[in-house]
Amino acid sequence: MTDYSVISDVSEFHAACAALAAGTGPVAVDVERASGFRYSQRAYLVQVFRRDAGVFLFDPPALGDFSPLQDAIGDVLWVFHAASQDLPSLRELDLLPREIFDTELASRLLGHERVGLAAVVENTLGITLKKEHSAADWSTRPLPAAWLEYAALDVLHLIDVYEALKAELEEQGKTEYAAEEFAATLTRLPKPPREDPWRRLSGLHQVRGARNLAVARSLWQAREAFAQDQDVSPGRLVPDRSLIAAVLANPQSKQALAGIKDFQGRASRTQLDRWWQAMVDGRATEELPRERVPSDTLPPPRAWSDRNPEADARLKAARPVVEATAEELGMPTENLLTPDHLRRVAWDVPGTTPEAIGDALAELGARPWQIAQTAQKIADAFVEAAQTADEAPSDAS
Image (cartoon, rainbow, N blue to C red; front, side, top):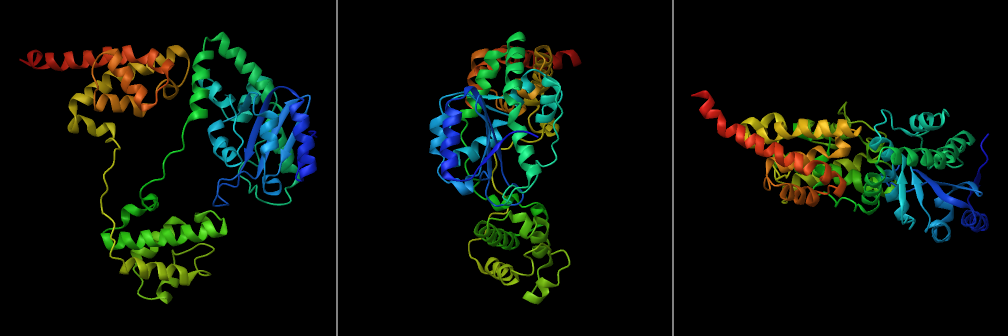
């Protein structure tokens, strides 16, 4: 059994914060949510471990104000596994680290084949963790003892893992790479809300015509409002496929809607009036959505040879070079350079000098170390692609 303290009242909370403030070294932090169960991505458990303090499992719904914890640990290094998943939930609690270390990201930069927490702990420490409750509904109260044990183990070994990976980064000369990646993770802004989030309905491509799209939008909006009000994941009320089935079936009455076999979900019948009214509203609205919306998404590379042959040649020349560089560095290609970044500079070439390529990559969000490793090589590949294209006609004659 792991020693841990569950903190759910204010007096315990202040004592735990004092203990953590008096601890030594970095803090290990993890968050459990109820993804797939609840509408929000709020934290339902925050786990913190610090040497000479212990493991504390904080209950956010019971505690509310987390400023004492921020005061206790805000100035020390926070160690996460997959920090980008936890930081948004922590920000909702005003828990804001100044500096982080991400053991998952470090493992990727080091070229480890498996980067899940259990695999990283086993690889670095030889300790086997069970990951049997990771997809649980952490809004459940009271939380079962087995879940709490699992949650405590998620942070108990993280500082030892941090020390092992930090040493390995130093051995491979990747300490600065990691520092830039961690800083980027910490400062990365949330993506702005989509203009038409309802267009992400799975199966929407089957719906034809602006009026039918308006009905799909109305059903999505009704489900979204109800899900938010109930704090339930929308798909658990009525799944996407059921909303699409309702649109395609085009029922002419509430009873006909109820009779659609594929219109399923736990709220499909209990909230039948809500869904029928949404269909009525969608059929009546004068604000019809556009059938096609502009997008800055690039065509798939397989279509480039027809759409933009020069860009196709640049991508085909540069991609193997980037892949080879990643292999030399012992890391996945996507960690050396985001594939979309390479595709964008190949599609709309900013120039063929390393400086122009580097500036374009920086604008897209590439880190300085990534630019230093790739810009010159990409520029050389682009020049080679252009020269090959220029020589092609004379070769054929």
